[in-house]
Image 1 (cartoon, rainbow, N blue to C red):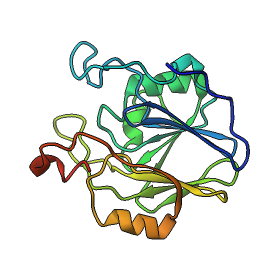
Image 2 (cartoon, rainbow, N blue to C red; image 1 turned 60 degrees about the vertical axis):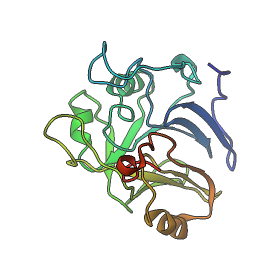
Image 3 (spheres, rainbow, N blue to C red; image 1 turned 90 degrees about the horizontal axis):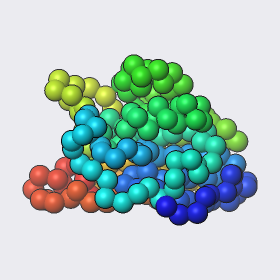
Length: 207
């Protein structure tokens, strides 16, 4: 793991620390935001089986600064890691922001501070920032009978000092151009990486 981050960025300052996979610590304008955090050893419904972590997180969990908001892009196990979200609830009491239909899953684990948003819907947060849901070319599934019953999305963090874009998982589609036109130019953008082969199958889900 890397060094312990500072507690907060000052107004107008942007500090980003990569943790793993799609987990990023974004510190901007005095607010600390985590995207799709996963600290479990496996991204799986089972603790003893499934894809296992190859490298430790870039920040130790106990070294995280106070977390104000957690953005959860969709319900796949490598993005919505319930054990990690429960740890964050207990240690930091953040607000969780996610797509429509995901609050019930979080609340089933007693994560009650949840805001659901739709594509292009905005919710204000601290220090004059706001979070906007953005379309993505992906899907959702967590069990055997819930395919596409909750929303997948990306997020724009809107700031007077410049916007930041986190796309979540997405294949390439014309929506990226529209997002850039509507909310750009971006100070920084986090775009999906990997799980893109074979192209005949993955191009509809990952860039």
